[in-house]
Image 1 (cartoon, rainbow, N blue to C red):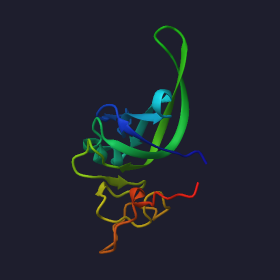
Image 2: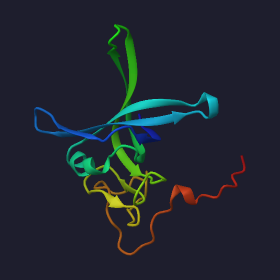
Image 3: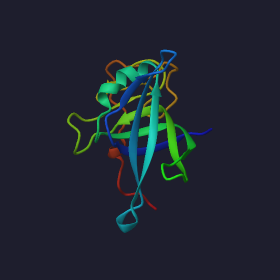
Length: 159
C-alpha cells in the first residue's frame, strides 16, 4: 500500500480545472517542513483532488491554510528550464483535514474520501480521521461527542 500522510501549508490558492473529458481536478501545492533549526528545509508537494470533491473543496483551499494530507504518493520526473532533470513529489489526495492555527479564521474541519462533503470539525464523522469508516465517508453521527483531536494528547510520552 502506497499512502503518505503529512502536514503543511498551502503555498497558493487551489486551482480548479476541467479535463478534456469534463472531469474536475483541483491542484494545489503544500509546503512540508522537514527538520528543525538550521537544518530545517521545505519540501513542496503537488497535490490533486478529483471529481465532485474538487468542486466542493476549491473555495476552502486558500493560501496559508494548514492541512493534513493523506494519499497516494508518486515521484515525478521533469526537465528543468536549464536543461537538467528534476524530480518532485505528487500526491493524489484521499483525505484532507483542515487543522486550524494562528493563520486560520474559524478552526478546522475534515473531509475524507468517497461521497459526502466538507464538514466543520465540531460535527463528528463516523470512524474519525484516518479510520476506515463507511465507504461513503463523511457520514454524520447524530448527537454524539466529537472525535478526539490530535492536540488533546497527553504530552508525557515515555520515550
